[in-house]
Length: 316
Image 1 (cartoon, rainbow, N blue to C red):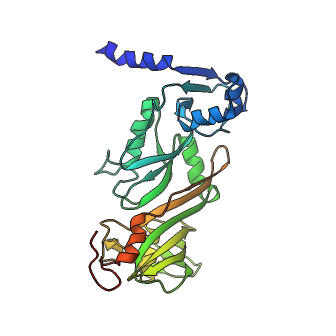
Image 2: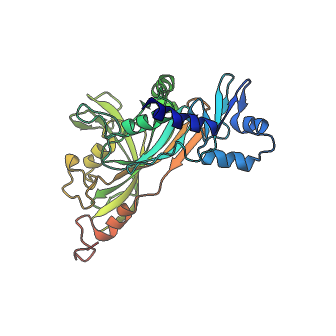
Image 3: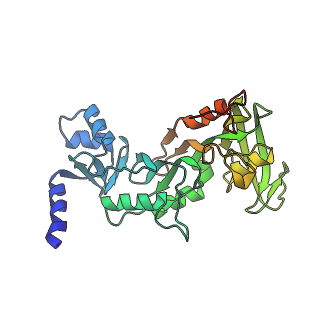
């Protein structure tokens, strides 16, 4: 049995070129120097095909800063470390962090009741295939029923950097939601005090028993008893968007906890579609965006209760 487990590793190793870094350099320049005659286009293709690794982590950033002592591997077997999962998609990965898009229904992190069906566990298993010592660390979360973009990091130092400097590093977090009722305003800002148990609505800067929370919103479309709304977080409190939308009388479709009795999509109609931040190590501006879910747009033509503008039941 031992022979069977070692043979695949030996075969894979023959298909990887290992290059030692002896002086500081960007990854693109380093590869072009070490692989004489290779073009920039070819290097970018290797990176996009996810066959370049730095210290056992897949690297796709062409200007990733290399330091002496690092090891760069080019594994010719395409997609040797390919990631596939029905609930999770990798948007970006380097030696320090990983950005993903998760589907609704998947927990971000483990709980006492659920250890394995989480994005954190799935990604942990993935990075351990690259190296058994690899591990995923949490820096923020999305609710189970919220879909969209989020990120994790790969070491405790980067985790501490992110948590201690979150508001300086993360420059734009936006969501899209379908809310009950037609919004009265085209845009506005909601300010309130939030706690885990109770919502305090107040614009006062004085502490009112919770954490001061600010959400900016813009109405994209109205129709058939609901509205498509884009939301930008100035603060990131637990359930902030959900509580804020309920506080102005427009709970998110499918959000029974926060006052909505309608659930035509069978999910919470909330999606994190944009995340922009400065890389905690390279300081490069990173921007990620996904399209609004098609089901959200369709809901405005069907109506929040599943009927069209004339009250006739819409059949999918």
